[in-house]
Length: 403
Image 1 (cartoon, rainbow, N blue to C red):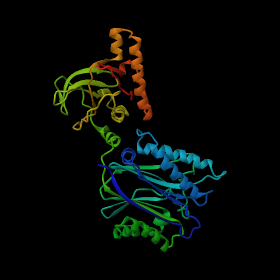
Image 2: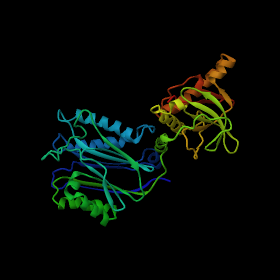
Image 3: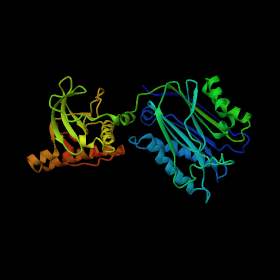
Image 4: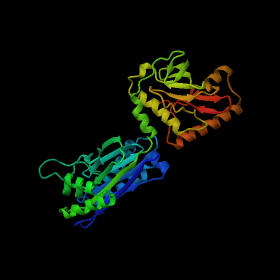
């Protein structure tokens, strides 16, 4: 089930000579929307800089084009942060000594979650069940007479500080992005009244923009409204991030059942991980990988294990082990299929050097596996004989990512 949205936008120059606001909506193909989400952004160029309109338009264009080219293994916030930092450097390098400046608020909706990146004095509101909530902070000075002077903006400082907010989506809720030319003139009560009286999204944003200028706004006025019509399926990366709080299963004994898995034996025990052979309800053998108890309090250990699972699911193919859905699990581990065969380390220990044709075939398969990873911007940090499994069918599989 995919995330279903409806949206509308409006912008007006007002009494200004030029509209230096910019809006951007990106609704990609379904597959890309599932992995990267839908992007909605509003930027308000600073009129006192060299070219505020250019700063706003260029920043949104760069964000819209580059966000969908970032690695799928980056979180939404990580991708936005990398891009905004790069855009900040670009803006500071322009303008012949006077940097280009703009505010920017970007909202990404993906699956069942939202991510907000915000710098400046545009506002992002959440409208649900008759309640209007402002999600953003106005980055302006609070001294008398300076309430409209920005203390944070793209291009303003060498070290950009962006506010990020993430949360769960709700059915039928709306997100509203407004430039200060709208919210400063109308106020929250007026905005709330318009949203209540105008269920049609386009009429609502048109009314907000027109009302701002009728109410005396001397600035450009822009509004972008997004409604969540239907929640999507939870993104795998988001889901795994929430599972880091799961407890470890602890040392498993032969015959012990955990989350429906029957433990047969411990196959390997290292400082990094534990590997057990287990059976499912149909008697099929699988391998259960978890962390030793000594790593329970280790920072990022759980995240590393879950990211490894995420990576393996994203690169599913003959060069990598098949993972079980394990939908009933309540502990920190993942389950992969057990293949007949042995690791390259065991093979070398038992048989010594292998024939050259066999080496060449394994090298060919290893290059194919690494190529699959690199095309997805994934780097395997622990390729060694212990992590290369040669199946009895002659298939080479790449194991542990070394996270």
